[in-house]
Length: 201
Image (cartoon, rainbow, N blue to C red; front, top):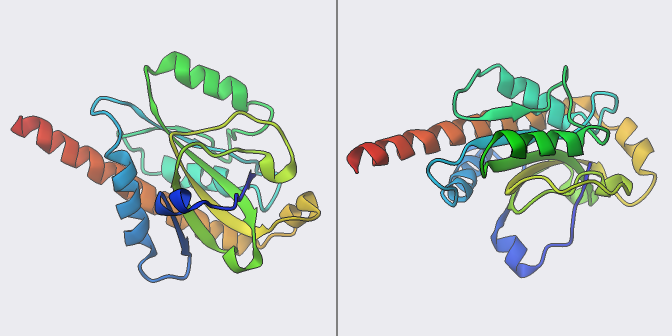
């Protein structure tokens, strides 16, 4: 569970925040992801790390995204964190150590749920830099990702564990579907473009 920071002007420029009800949400997320993916080097392996646990309604966004992504069986990225094999507070450090041992200089995309202001609930964010899992519930965990996506699932600032347990599952599922679909399409389009450019060279 990531804590939503107060964005500076620079962060606002590098961060997309869009309500899940926006009819253009898929296109907006894909375009922003393509912008961030363009910063990656051609041969960098893409790793998607979906953080969260299936034991909390509000914090199961990551594993839901991971399970949805796994269905694509995509050759374009490596996936960590599903409902069956979640990446959470207990095994996050071990998972990250394994990733950096297995892959040379990977491009990591972190995914997590977060709490925010009431007006932001239901929004999805795409931002540069790592997410900080556990911050929303005052845990010290290692940062994750060169870029990250978060879904704002409920209101933060008080009784965070109780709030997470009383989050609407329908909202979390909807956010997870949007994130998974958009992320898969963006990575596929980026890899296709990269392959075409390589052939032209």
